[in-house]
Length: 256
Image 1 (cartoon, rainbow, N blue to C red):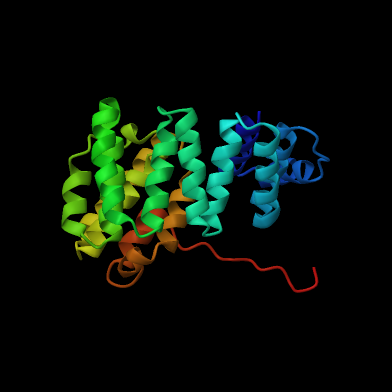
Image 2 (cartoon, helix red, strand yellow):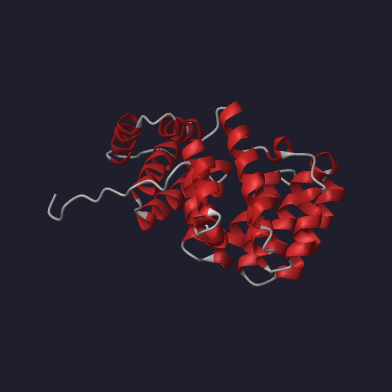
């Protein structure tokens, strides 16, 4: 299935087997699709190569060929979000929820779409409704609310919520490091830089123990703007002691 195909690529990249992953992507983009599954695989291939418009076209075709294919609709919604077509993405997620009212990832995606449409209070209220609807995932929805509050620069409220969460294991299917990264970002925004570094250290330990994607975690730490104070003296020395020096970017010469 397309989902398994995508997971295989992610796993290969996580293991550092980039050439094998690139071969799978190349094979996918060279497909001549006939079925919804073919279009899904090719769309995923285009997504990994950065060809967003072609990916969008293939995901739309997959939905057209198989309207009941929830993965196709989810991929379509995600692609629309990436292209800032938030209203269309919201409609896509609402269609999924009409078909599968208990699809929690669709509910989560709807939250993101509402927030992107500047319907922040509606999104925040929805997280509270989702706690009542899915009490077994209370921490997951509270984590989502914490992230939205942080985006609204309501950092103290965001920190209070995320500190009440048991731990990263409740965030499945998101990786454990996202929990520690989120806490580090909020603490950094509150100028609690040593505490933010503590979170990064715990995140590294957990990610290594669980054999998660260390390079993903580290890459985010070097990229997230809110962690910029940690990348400067006097905090950079400790940061590099935890995650290592910033990777050098090797650019290919033009024309190659």
